[in-house]
Image (cartoon, rainbow, N blue to C red; front, top):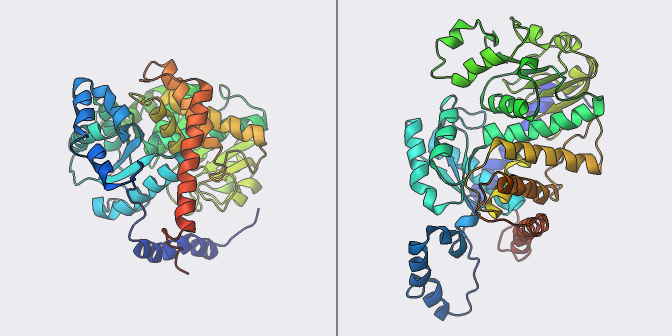
Amino acid sequence: MKKYGVEELLRRAEKPSRQAITYHRFYEGKMQVMPKCAVTSFDDFAIYYTPGVAAPCREIEKDKELVFEYTNRWNTVAVVSDGSRVLGLGNIGPEAGLPVMEGKALLFKYLGGVDAFPLCLNVKTPDQLVTACKWIAPSFGGINLEDISKPECFYVLEKAREELNIPVWHDDQQGTATVVLAAVLNALKIVGKKLGDVLITMIGVGASNTRGAIVLMKAGVKPKNLIMVDSKGILHRNRKDIEEVKEREPYKWDFCLKTNGENRTGGIREALKDADICIAMSRPGPNVIKKEWVAGMADDAIVFACANPIPEIWPWDAKEAGARIVGTGRSDFPNQINNSLGFPGIFRGVLDVKARTVTDDMCIAAGTELARFAEERGIREDDIVPRMDEWEVFPREAVACALKSIEQGVARVKLSRQELFERATQIIKNARESVEILMRKGLIKAPPQ
């Protein structure tokens, strides 16, 4: 593995940022709305708008479920954020968060064929955010919550899931958890260990690792075999500081009670001793995790250091310390753990069956399918998960989620595996080919040099 100095890595990491200013101003944003119906003459507007449009309106008035057949609601997702915790930028507000949500919408369309709309909301409380989601729900087939501060994001997700009759998903939680699960499953296949036997240390107890822990336990990790570390140390049942705020952070207190079967105390060093897997979603490094701490892990250790732009430990340092498999959040290192592998395919699947919700079981189905796809095309220590350019993974992931939706009784329509696969494949291919045609025709301009 090639080593880079800190200055070189920062230079490489900053290059997209330098280009981004030019590109964003050049294109004046990244998304637009295009018709999907044929317009053969101006007479067609009498069908699509007044007076003809009154006919489907009356049908929907009699049966609200018909909105999914007569409109594009079945394929629309709102990308909702209050801008309170945007990427690594913090609370920059809804306006400054809009470029990120547009970018998310671009990935939704190009990778999943989903029509996603960025909605940055000027709200002040979690309840206002939930209320806003309820207000807009009649226009959308799903809601993707994005970049909301902790612990408010947990409340918003659960409350919105309870009160809305469409899938609500928080990508920082469920998306990351899905891809981490896939990486864990395939890494364990390489090292010859079982999910129910391994000791896993999770560094950072933010949105990603919180939902990650929940999904891992649901997938088969024993709670006692999880050790979680926040900025003050290992979570354990005697953490009075967390008990005092358990009403505000119930998940964290629940981890204190259920995980860490050995009741370890201390910090990252103590948490990593004899651990089989380290999943770090904390703060940029390096040296958040030290080489000697990795050296104290179990044989054939697995280290996922996912902070950006600099991982908690350099991959080569983790390897030199004895880790057999290392992943990061960066695309220029092997084994990128990126939630862009998750949300496009998952939403494609739940939208295709017009699901009423999206569950953690669907995340497990998606993560398992991601792992299976990579295993079938071949995995090795430096290539354990699919890459974004392997577009064929997204229809398969969509099918896995759609079938789980049907199995769990939350799908409005039931389709066969083959029907789902053909549908998802065609929609995703159409989205990608549409962009290529528009570029070829010059309707999307070539990027500036």
